[in-house]
Image (tube, rainbow, N blue to C red; front, side):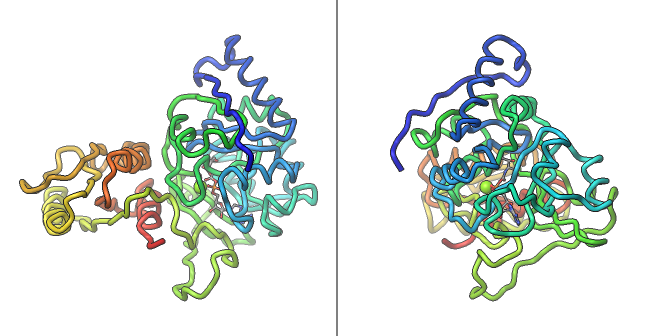
Length: 357
Ligand code: TXA
Ligand code: MG
């Protein structure tokens, strides 16, 4: 694609109503309405947006990210009237979930309106929708007056961006405008579910823990992709489930530490790091606060956060992978949090980042 100049405008989430904030939002909304691409902060990660009802604009997202056309996009709406332009209806359970979690980081797969271009859903009958809660995202969609298709604002397959600088590192010169609203809050993407008749299927664990969804709408079934490597990713019910994804340049090695007391987990970690770093000098570690390293360790570390504080670990996960990449390590060792609450999202991202290319 032809290089373009990426305009960077700042809109602190606490001051969207100031003159500068309003000006930046109006300009970004105009870019969206005229078919351009705008990266913006959400409560999960930064998104790369375009008018979801304009097939040509949506194509701009795929080009900028180098994303294959078979991977569909999430449509972001700011109110119920806008939702109706995208979906034809929602089941009783879906409505209950919207009432409980919107605006917020829950994505629902719902029957699409014919006005939604094939490019958005990769030709599928269901469209992914969510109503973000981040004030900059909401104000932008409201000002644009159109639903906004937005994947995470990274190169396809790469680590998700949680700051404006991460977006530029991947997409500078490939998108029209970037709204810098400070770090994204959660650091993990939205939870993606399909709510069929009486059956809820989880395709991506995310910022809304599955336990909270179950408390509102009953049991959730975790979709597991087939083990058979011959099943093409694009034919899966939600293509993101089958991919290497969220990956830094370095290879990633998850370290299982069990679910015992933290002191026992530290001992498992220490053993694994000693063994794995002995043969690879150029190793980086995502180091939980206060955790030990072998005396012989000569690699790089990222001070990740307090083990057991999943909010902190989630918020700093992608940032840590990018920081270790910048230190040019060859591989990254990362302890694996338990799969409950937000930990399920961290574990999912870690395992997908660790897949072989
Ligand atoms: O938090 C988030 O969801 C962020 C922010 C920007 O909102 N967006 C995001 O989008 O993570 P993306 O494109 O990186 O991930 C969307 C996931 C992919 O795994 C994709 O396969 C799945 O949702 N998906 C999107 N539309 C779908 C559809 N119609 N049917 C099945 N899966 C879908
Ligand atoms: Mg993504």
